[in-house]
Length: 352
Image (cartoon, rainbow, N blue to C red; front, side, top):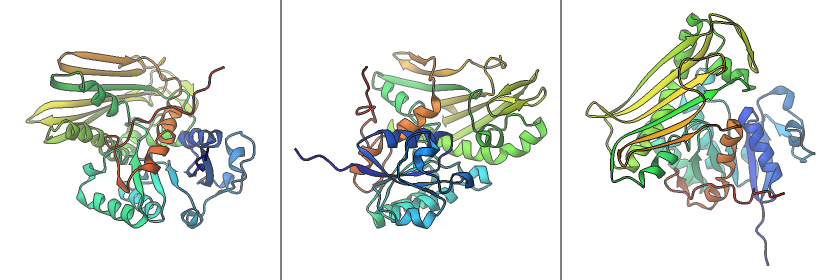
């Protein structure tokens, strides 16, 4: 029996999520690591296996974008920090993704693009032109949102005869998150209220665009025309000093934030996504405890809760890695979760 050759994969960025992704690629016989793009100068020239504590992979990490573009590979797991972190916008990520697609590599990205249509026809046309040039596919899984705020709500609506309102809430505990770039620089924890308000502006734009994608995707899938997506946010200050993996949270600095994104139809909410981020859930009593809740108002009423996801970063990485076979097999173009088979952990099951 003839076996399929492994799918050649490039890992683009090895941050908090990228390391989980790289480890998964190296651990699967059906995947072959073709290259690794890194941003950290300390990782340049290191073996990919060393970066994630595994045996040598005989693939050396590089920061040379042109070298990555020239590689013979089937798919790129694109997982850098969003452009908002560097003061840019999503068009910066679009340029990189278009270059990868045009070079003949399918792209799975966690920087958004769950539903590129929400950015308007100009972005869609650029992405589709790159897909056509390279004969490739783009699929966005997102870090958050992605799956919990779009796939699961849509799956549950299959049990409905009438929908009045979709509500999704995620509460996350950042206590063990290792990335200071994410926890402090992007989310804004440990900052004073004044510094937070100034620094959060680009992040607010990124958040609004990201969650608007999920809201718009769900609405379009259900044939609902939204008038707008409203956003609001607020933050909480620490009442005591405490330590988290990303640094020290001092009393009087930002230790939690709450974001609400609401898709409106004639002034009434059709879908609401509430996101609560806590530096340490044991120190922040305001707002709900960590976990996920999906509530569907209609006929019938439904509430689904996920009390815990023990390794959220690993879940985000797995969502992308498990999508590789379907993305590589898909026809060229932009493919959302509505177009691809549900990614599962098949092939990764381990029974002992």
